[in-house]
Length: 432
Ligand code: HEM
Image (cartoon, rainbow, N blue to C red; front, top):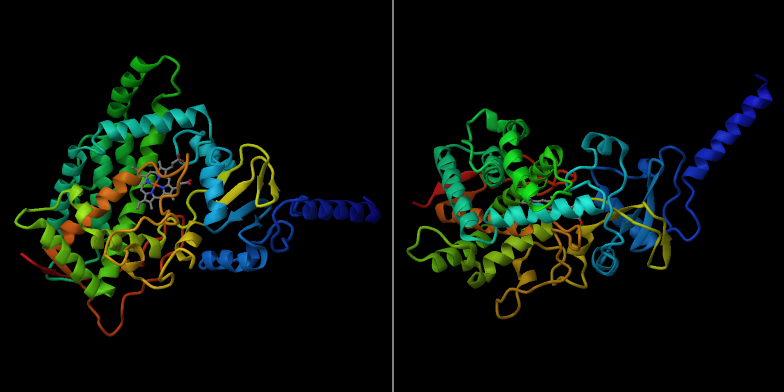
């Protein structure tokens, strides 16, 4: 091949690669993207949220970045996020196409399923299953109370040593999903339990047959088959375990960092509990301080900082820009939680952020750790109930102490879709 032909081909290829990362007219602006890598070299994934905030200083609350050659629109701040999640909730409720994930999942289940009839049906069915298995009823509360007593026993075994609570908390939280899906819990030292997904496989035959029969009686045109049920069960574990256990671990870490706040919570718990063994979930209505602490931990730690990516169902207008059908939308939920328009102490860990002058609990509209709208978290009520009951039971039984007063706990999260704590060990002082 002649040199001039090779050069022409190289130029055409370069032109194509530049074109792939050139923003269409009316598309949200953003930092200059390079061929192939896009903006990946300009972001540090250990500090991704900080980078997203920096870009928004230059480009505003709605801007774009290229993840390789894939354009993504980043949405920050309450006004724009409300428009995407609520006002135009359905229009922005699709999930981006991801060849690998789609091939693995076959578009089944909930979390990454595209918006459409099958997703709607799975979501409705999963919600009604959660409800009929006891969410919002006493039975769910009793399951969590029972699991709390196992967690207490596990902690008791370790009260003379320093304990890393991760495995026990993870197992306790997974057991709540197990009790809904499989109708039973698993001991913390059960080797099978250490691999939840194996469990899912083992038990699916039984669960599937029960659920499928139930569905088949309902409708002959259901999208439910054993693979879809399996995907929904996996999604309950994926969505419901790490998120909730990381939140509970953050609660313990912050209580050790702020022992005076821990003490105030315990006083409120003791006062409301009286002579009873444990609190009921409905007791929360007269426990504004404890509720404010739990919400403040969620606000400050942003356990799922970017939610799950959304995508547009058709061409859409947002903030004066045109966003083509199928564009990935990154919703920076963490941007809501430090916005000084909405918070008295945006950069300070302070439960007063959720309390008025009379100590009553405030409802703050820009507090959205579970996202909102048609794609909002399906497990929000369950997670809130778990956090309240596990947290108050743990504080009833133990005082949590940071073992090394000379160096306070490291409160830097490990960045990921879910942001857990760094591994830590704590000292338990039994109160009984
Ligand atoms: C503290 C705990 C939790 C947090 C912070 C959390 C947060 C979130 C967030 C931010 C989303 C993305 C919503 C969106 O795309 O806009 C989500 C989705 C989801 N969550 Fe949760 N979640 C928690 C607990 C749970 C639990 C306990 C379950 C299961 C019982 C669960 C199941 C799901 C599912 C299935 C989805 C996907 C919904 C859909 O795409 O239609 N989550 N969650």
